[in-house]
Image (cartoon, rainbow, N blue to C red; front, side, top):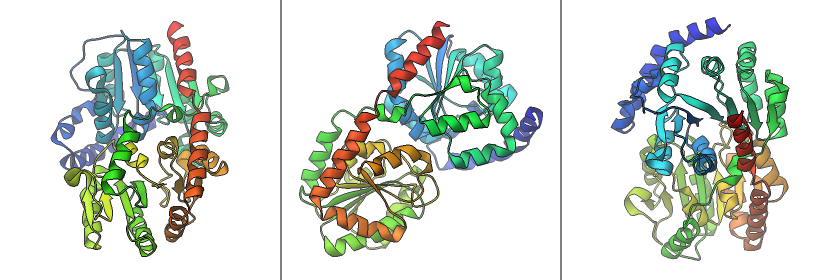
Length: 422
């Protein structure tokens, strides 16, 4: 099974390279110059005994932030390697950690690429954030005696179905993992069903509850509110995908009919769509500001397109209500904890399987509401924007859920300490 998998990886590699090159033209030049890293080819940093953390993209990097900082505090002399798959993830690593970690792209799961990668970073611990099962990589860790962990582990029902054709291979790969620290009991049960060693699986909670609120985010949000008008109704549509921007703009039109001074803060998920979203908003006749040109919207703007990465928290802090995207379309939703941490009421669509238990907990405790369809977003928003006491209650409930669930990073660090001592 593994031979057939590896053969398939070799056959699909030309398509992956072509896709990488096409995407490279839309990314900053430094990203497409680094494509050889996908084959394990990069200048060796010259260290050994590194602690290696893999985080696929922006969301996983954000989840890993408190863990990486904890590792930097507890293992100050150990080199830290952070790998990502996406350029946006790489940019977030640079933004958060600069040169204090060594960043390289994760190699394709080809035996020769994995060997090169391992020889260059020489890890003594491998930590995979959330869900990434790469059989050749996992077997390479076992052969080299490198303890392998999956932390903040989650496995949706959709992912389980996706692994079904390769279930035997996934099960044998998971048997290479020393510890699987799952976000929830449901995630833990799914890993066991997929074939993980039951003794290796435990529940540690979600590290995203331990994310630090950026210093000055609340003050920056208050300053922005003073600039665009402290009494204006303001709502945010964050991490939106294709189809969700139009739903948000249609909802905003309904809001403007009742609240003509309302402001929408619109943050598309992917940087390559920033310009497209801006043009769409302008073509619909809204008075538009952008983060890159205007900085902060003024009192005359109706929509602000946040065309920047890693700057959502101050905008959440300046909002009355937050809609979290990826949930009106079958993407599975994005991080609802950022607005919850700032006591901002949360709206989500019907598709939240990526954050299933967190979203359910927020809804059950009254900190979030589910919108059944795109045409219901406007009515839900209006109800909340017109009811300040209800918003306050929801914000307090959301923040309580956030505070109650903290502590996952400490639990994961105890597991890491145990593995390294062994």
